[in-house]
Length: 292
Image 1 (cartoon, rainbow, N blue to C red):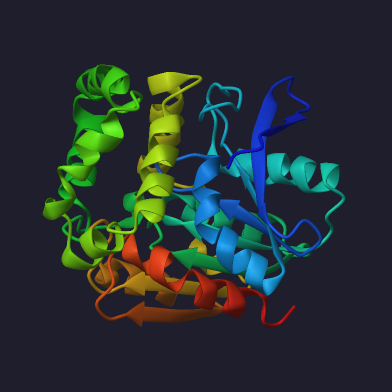
Image 2: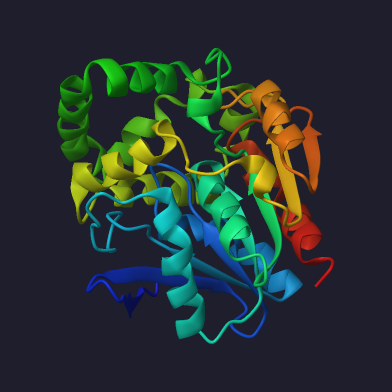
């Protein structure tokens, strides 16, 4: 289900978003992963209905139906989110970020502490530029980092090459044939057809609209310095990470948690990058809203 809505932004662009859960529930802004899009928020729909939570999930600029924003920086996000929250007449809210949504959650906590109750980061991306050792990252991410700094034309060409393939609906069938290459917890979690369709359809949709340009602009955010210190993010953070996460090892997640002043970290046995939010969403949401 995707009842898409639009917000007109001050810069002349538009932000596409969808809502899940309960319309009058506790507001939680959902920040999708990479490459992904607003419909990833459907992962939280059932748990949000049970817990009376309102999930609001937007495509980031350049992703799917949101307008591309040239030269976008991570520090631009809080101003956009402030417009978004004001448009919805939401004063105080929580943030739930999955994977690549993590840096957007941290910068929101940094710049909008008076409006953020708690932040939950699940299978979260780490600040690549701060790492002295990249061995804890997925090999694909290590290659992308190397290419970004050494062969940027090659990296851009690869994005344009894969875009037509990934954006086809048949790409979901292709993805199923590769599930056996995932860590066992992720492969098992994706036996749930609904979870598989939400995750991979949201990835496919990310490449629509601005296409490879939007997805690559989003990726560049992770490779560059974020523009702030995690040590300055002092809102309460709940960090959830699977011990079998192959995208970002729980070792690098531990390093991130140590840098956050007010962080409760939970490292979950026998869970991977995808299986953690799929299997534990109710627990994650309940903890996020517990303090109101």
